[in-house]
Image (cartoon, rainbow, N blue to C red):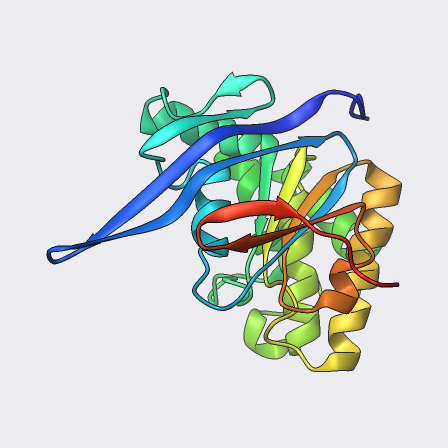
Length: 233
């Protein structure tokens, strides 16, 4: 699906500073990372270390103070907001700790949403959304609304939504952080299966070093700096 030698995401010398009154807090300091097609990469770090900020910058949701981010070969932060949104919609999927499903819509409608935003015909969007929900084990829950789904089911629907546009990369921010251990393992197994099956790259922020150890590469974000780490098996 993707050329695994080509970087689907490439960040170079990225920095981000936030101002809190008279105080400046440097959250990211000269961060560089490249992720190839089909790669699975984990970022670990303590709470408040800037992991979510990094994902937002890499996904084009936030703008760095310096440095460059490329998605699918395009420089993100020189684009207009509308062009940036189109780039994200075509090439990036997002999964968060909390599913962010729209409560008034069914699972199928939630998963189809990125396709509809991208201009797909409703019938095609719902067909693809339903097929993907079946793939993640929710074939009998497609018409259920989020409040009728368990926590694990909601997160599986969120993963389906992230993948429905066949993105080059999925950025996942503590995707199992709101789930119990058993459900977390099932959700993680699902992401690993989909990575193998679809060839989609995954960049996952997690506090769970056991789960991170199953990725191809692991980085630690600390004091604004991103460095590769090795974990004991």
